[in-house]
Picture 1 (cartoon, rainbow, N blue to C red):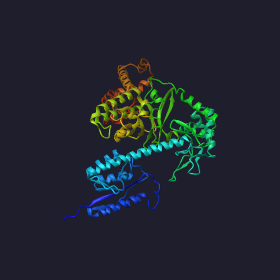
Picture 2: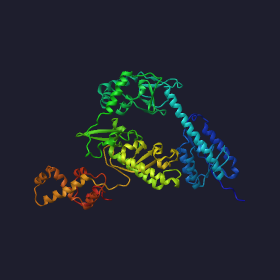
Picture 3: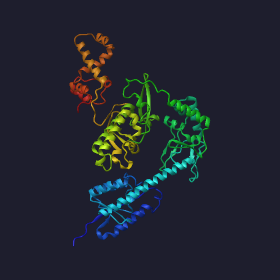
Picture 4: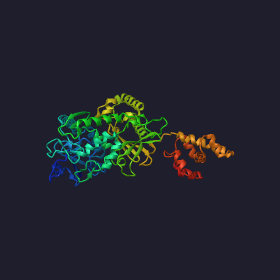
Length: 565
């Protein structure tokens, strides 16, 4: 009689909150012991418990992005596990869509799972049917719980209660944790009053920022549970604007777009508050400088002047990119700048992206993603052939809307944008997409709502050029014009026309002609790519003028990045 094959079993445990996890014997331990006992009872079937533990404490079952679960799935893919044992099925996942993905992945690896308190497993069709039913109820329970929590927060704020979050400068939580109120921090309250007074005098956030820094006013120092200290730094313009527009200082509580009377005392009286809000409103409607149709991609066109992506953009470190601008020769240039640079820090990894170019790149990536998803039918978790044509038409209408509105339409579609050195990660709003595509938010495929696209960004800490995905040929009009002129000028100089005469007829100085005429001696390969617009994105007229152009064509191509072209 042949021996039974060994089935390597792994126990997965999870708890939604971190309450009680610091106890010597907690909920995760209880789940593990119950599962271990069940595995021991199946020893006659060849079940063996693996020593590794997969515990996720304080993590929701509504997502698969859990460290222990990801480690477990990696071990399954590697063929190290043949059976997953859980205390209840909702410990593994509460999402029906996620469950379908897990089952498909487990089947591919030849792995099954068992619930200790629910006598079934995924090795039979009846077990899978029962699991689907249970998961439907688990998902319903999660959604109802979320709605109940949202309703509770809204009702509590309507009564003026403080429902947690980042405590603003000038206040502290009530000493009694059962009392949902804020109390005035007498050491920080003068800072708040000073900022409001400064704004009534200066009517400028930049002026208030400079004066506050000179007075030594700082943000609220905070200490995290792990002992890490943040804050205590000079107030930035973004922090000042948030402070000046926060109704908490008037003794009120904001919930979404509604304001309620709070139970905490006000730091700012009504006349001063109204005066500052009126000034902020006037400043927001003030013209922001002269616009020109000839501005470069770094300038602020109509779409960018409103900072379309404000509050959405972060870099790979999690630092927010804040809209900023500068004036040069009467022209206004807008950027998205890393907050650590705006706050006065010096960091060579910080970003300073031209706003118009970056917003156009994000818009291009989004439109390309929508087209690809519609063509490949990857919009839904489970594609439906009967509605594919209708869905494609709706996506086409959305794309036309994006093209017509430009960057101004992005805030209604995007949730977040994460910039990395060689890519950008976009997350779409399922609620906003539902308005266009008439699809329930839970039916979208995860890879449709959250995706990464290539993004070529040259240089960090200064403005740069941006290219998305495939580089579409786009000739540089300025470079083309000067290249053509350089050939004309060099031909005239070769026939004996003096440089001064060539410059006078061209309407330029002799130094202007002298620095640009050498472009005519660029290698045929370089000139061909300039004409086609397929040259490297960082090759510009300014770079060619600043550089000493080698006489050797091969050396030219190597110097200006054409060795791979």
